[in-house]
Structure formats: C-alpha cells, structure tokens
Image 1 (cartoon, helix red, strand yellow):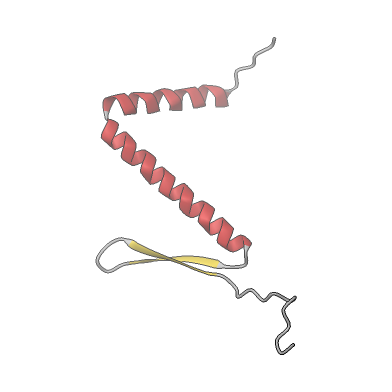
Image 2 (image 1 turned 90 degrees about the vertical axis):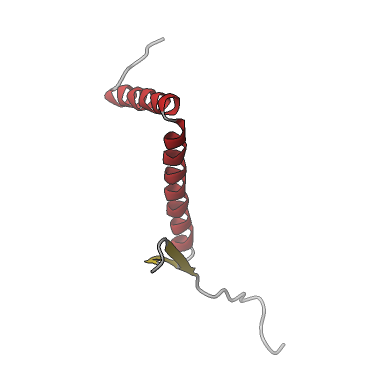
Length: 85
C-alpha cells in the first residue's frame, strides 16, 4: 500500500492538533468558536438555498445591536390549477 503525504494533509493535521489543544486548554472559548462557525455555515447554506429558488437574502444592523436577516422568494404558481374552471 502506498501512502502519500501532501502539504494539505500536514496542514489539516496541524489544524486538528490546534483544535484539540484549544478544547483542552480553553473549552468554553473553543465551544463558542465552534458555534460561531456553525452559524456562519448555516447562513451560507440558507443563502444558497434561497438563491437557488430565485430569492434574495439580506442582512441589516439593528439599532439596539445584533442583526436582522430577511429573505424573499418569488411567488409560486402551480400551472396545473387554472382559475375559474
């Protein structure tokens, strides 16, 4: 069996080692970092889904802090249903 080690493999292992060290040394901060990353991924996925359906996703700052995320989708018209049949 031939095993190759690429620079990407080495980088991935270094990132994993850093992550394990963070969880061990500062568990609360590591958990918050994970949650922040998960939220970013969720927003990215949501945006792609909305755009794939012809919609738009926007964000605006709230005066009191935080943000508001809005999305719009085009109206769906089922062409099988004909009005006034």
